[in-house]
Image (cartoon, rainbow, N blue to C red; front, side, top):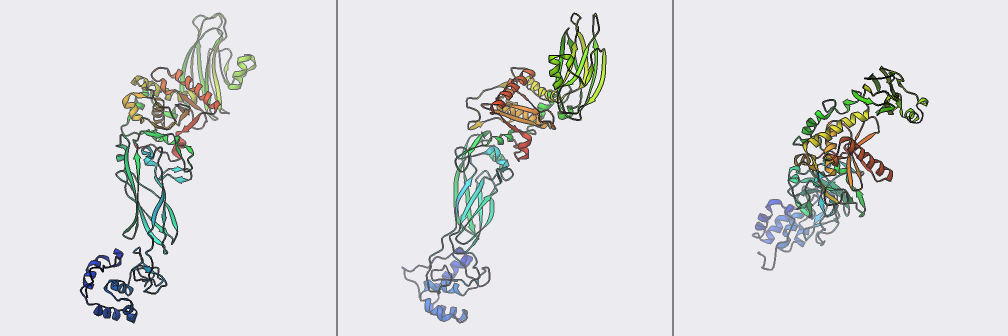
Length: 548
């Protein structure tokens, strides 16, 4: 018997019969119904009467055949469900419409189960739906709050069916990432929320020179069958676009400025920072860029001190430092040769300013031609070296002072050498029209600044910070309203920072740049408007340098 033109074969899940489904239908349509029913009855272990009762037309034969076919479902003996997954071992069977029915007669009809769905999905996008390329290397590594930073930070999978499912969810930022697949178990009638760790094609992202659109595609599969697909378009920003703030899930702005630390790149691909360090060496009193190895090194200071005057050097020392002094004094024409040299702490220096006789010194002499002595520092702090000429009518005294360098002096030597190298290179300051720190901002990588020979305040700050980190020195980005400059920690064991104004490379001296930065530091700190982004802390938080 052949079907009439109004009779169509029912649609079944492709996984029901695998690849042989079409061939089986062809055979069924060529076999007489009664002969087929007898064949099925003989193979169904005494259930033939039930089959004969309900399989009254060719269109139901496939459902009848499936009722007594063995399956590969879990638990043994279960039948295939509508999703194509194995049964739950509870003796489910295929109803007349070919979908699972549990606890019903074979002739009862049930509606197809609703398919599992993706959504809602939360992505890490900044500004106007922008993918932050500059931090792409941090996804899956860095903590932001209590969770690891992930581009797909949460994806909800809903299962409206009556049986649990084991699914896979694949996510891909097309053209800019590798596919990432996560297995997910979703309870019957429930939801599961997962995050998806995506690995990005960094070179492809860095090749973007202007914002472009790209699709994020999420695909949910159960077995080999795709159940749902979600596509979201995002804007891929160039690597130079930085966001200073972003909104959280409630719409509140949160500070995102710490991630500018990825632009501190001590080992850039083009080795521009290495070249800067090499050029800086000739500007250091040590004829080399030695970082914190400068601590404890000897330094020589020459000074001509006029009658009634003193030459002073403030120095910073920590507990345990050994301080040595080797002082010689000459005078071309002196009526009486008396010269003074003192090494004293800050408290006694204040007393000396009021009444020299009331102060005490650690090392020194009130009447010397030569002084050679040393001491151990018992308390961290600021100390003073003082070369004084007490004569009122005598000529100048010439002092040659060989002594232990202070931590502040060592740090200033190294950062000053970088300053002078950039000045010799002809680095110029360029301003930008947009306001700093208000929203997104385009900034240069340190390598780009060095190659172009120009920098604004944040560009220059990143160059200095990169060079200092390359030397093993601790640096910080000092962020104040509308401006930024750099600071270096004088000694890793001391909480003492010394800033320098990077925009003055082309117009100032090392001392004037330090003085200008100190004034801004003091004023903004007092006003409570200063943010100190310590590079060492950023690294500890997982904000590593970008592979620029």
